[in-house]
Length: 509
Image (cartoon, rainbow, N blue to C red):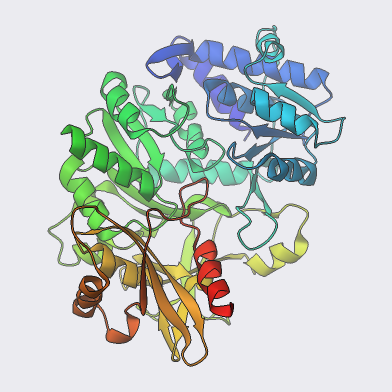
């Protein structure tokens, strides 16, 4: 199933339904959206781009991004979404590695790219006259037929442990992800809207499919990205808004809503994922905004599609195990099998910690031109996620940490998230990240990087005492470092690799 077929059908069924919005201003209905995508497809075909070719996107969020995406799919090409905040050299490497022959870019990034990529790679600015001409031609082409194993979305991992790997997401993966969204995450109706506040090159962009299929609205904030004040201002004007947000974005929304005495009116659903959502944060979020929150767990290799915790369970406070479930990432989504295994791949008993593995039609085809990495990650049909977790007897999965984040001190495993949860329960702690430092006696010791709320006079002694009331003595940090902010990547994830490198480099000097 070609994703462009969904746009084609929605346009035929409801051509006058509003489709694309910049802020509160509608810039295209579904008929116009489809017409522009078909025109872009025709223009791409004249550039010798066709089925199986790769078209890269290195640009910030804007409605034209969606038009160009569907133009590429219309002719059966695969898209290569690149985060606009990446360095131009990183983008150039991904374009070269993917073999993309055509790039849609922002004006300035396009100029920079032109100096780094092969001269045969065509670069067009989404804000330029050339793109304007591409989307205004006449075309009667219908979307090219694609099969379930055809490549649709070539997503590059963050590359925190080496060069990024190209994750091959097929049409079948997208179909599975889309249908399980309806069954396990949320419903979508024509009057709903999806707000793209996080990068469209990542999880937020993947949620376009459900809304195109249902003929719902697509909204890009005027600022082009996440701004808590702007979102809370326009949501009531748009109404019935859904959005994907990293936990750090949820925290900022809550802080802004509290400061302005707002309740999140107009926001129907906030799907959160992409990092640990701490208990204190989600409790406060639900108390302030009500049952608007849904948690999912996925990764690039199984996009948005491993587990889900629905809004009624995120908001539940009556079940005898509600707190345990709130701290989980939910249960397996309908299309996949999820298991917890040891290093040999043996299933572990409920409550035991092991690696999370997943199998099903949402799992990637493999890594682009990287058979070694593919064979290490996909084994006998199972995706080895690299995440550690446990599953209870009811099927709820609780993440511990990435396997590389576990701290082994004195022969005992210490899971940073458990320590972070303990510290975040102190009223004076705003953010925290826990890492291990190499130690000649213990193997590793625990170091906590802490961002404080300004008005609570937090000290090392206070936090140490607080930890001793919450967790075992051997798990508490041996050092607390008070910082103004934590290093994060372009998706809002804390870069623990940088923190580990910092403390271990200091140890060697």
